Structures are given as structure tokens and as C-alpha cells.
Image (cartoon, rainbow, N blue to C red; front, top):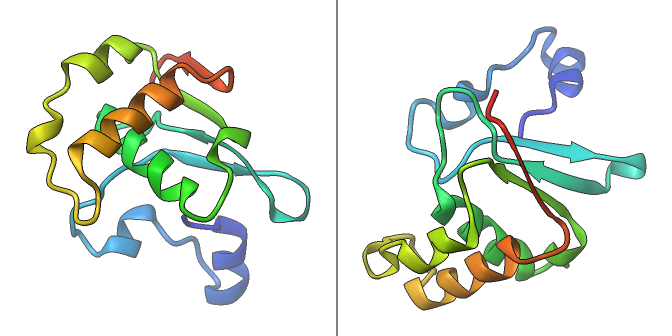
Length: 123
């Protein structure tokens, strides 16, 4: 997560999102929106050129549930994603350290059937 205002205040310039990972691979991309007092309110997976897949949402949802109440967040997915993707995704070949395919599949179903799940066109 890159806080543009903080970066300008601290470093005197905007830090680009690609700088954070120094060109290394990312599990996901998009926008996190914070409300009053820095409380995260929603996550949007529309990311321009990266185009994360449904596994990225599932891994983030599962990771967030390890210490937070992910169900309280508003999750904004790409328009083409649906619960059907959870059923057809090849979860057995997902290689994310610490996240098994079966658990990610459950997370996928939880987030895409949640009343907090909405979809929108990519930007």
C-alpha cells in the first residue's frame, strides 16, 4: 500500500507503486480505501495493467481474516468475476506459500457470495 500524501511529506515526492516491490512479482494489485482514523473500508481490484485473478482476491480475503474481520470490508471485484470462477479455477495448482487450494477456494466462495461483494468495470 502506497500512501501518496505521506510519501510526499516524508520524501518530498510521490512514490510510484512499482517502487515498493522493486520490480518483483506481486500477488495482487488494486486500491485500498481508508476512512476516518485510518480504518480500511474497501478494496478494489481494478488495477490498470496488472489484472489480478480471482485467486488474488481469495488470498487477500484469507490473509485479512487471519487478524481482521474481512467480512466487514466492501470488496470490489472485476466485472467478469463470479462465484462460478471459484468452481472452475484450478485451485490445486495455486502456489502461494501458506495458502492451500482448498482454503483459497472456500475464501473465494465466501467473498463472492458476501453481501459486501460488488463488481465494476476495470479502469
